[in-house]
Image 1 (cartoon, helix red, strand yellow):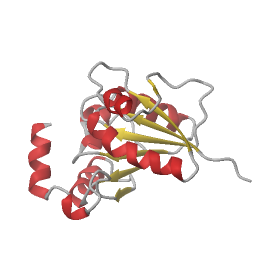
Image 2 (cartoon, rainbow, N blue to C red):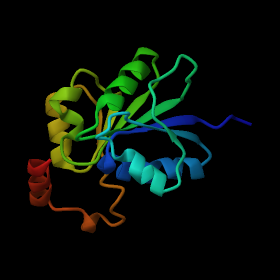
Image 3 (spheres, rainbow, N blue to C red):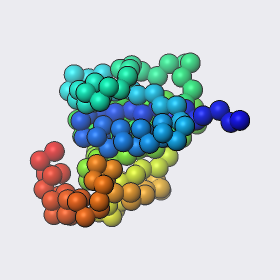
Image 4 (cartoon, helix red, strand yellow):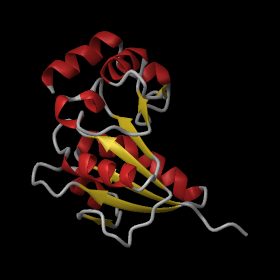
Length: 167
């Protein structure tokens, strides 16, 4: 029998946690071992949501003993330190790094351009275009928004632009 894959889910703020958490729970349901990590900055609101959901998490940097099979990282609009640190650490060890955007262009923010994942999951075609403009060689996959069970519930493109101007 094959050992379950170990996934580290890394989150920074409330928005990316809302997108990463349901996917991480689905991975657990499918037999993966998932460990949860949050950004240590005080602006991180991931801890509030994870605590409310009853999820055990750690707020720390990677350790030499960490050995995930995959890093699944939310792209935060505010608390990006963990996103940057875990991405750099994972890529340096050839651990696959997958980013999940919560809003248009959170994965393409200037402060996170110092690192790059192996692939990025985005909410729509406009977000894909932004991601590929910033990182032309990056595989970008449109997956929708996990917090919307029905794609018709997703904000329209105009609403997405309005949301980004506020963030």
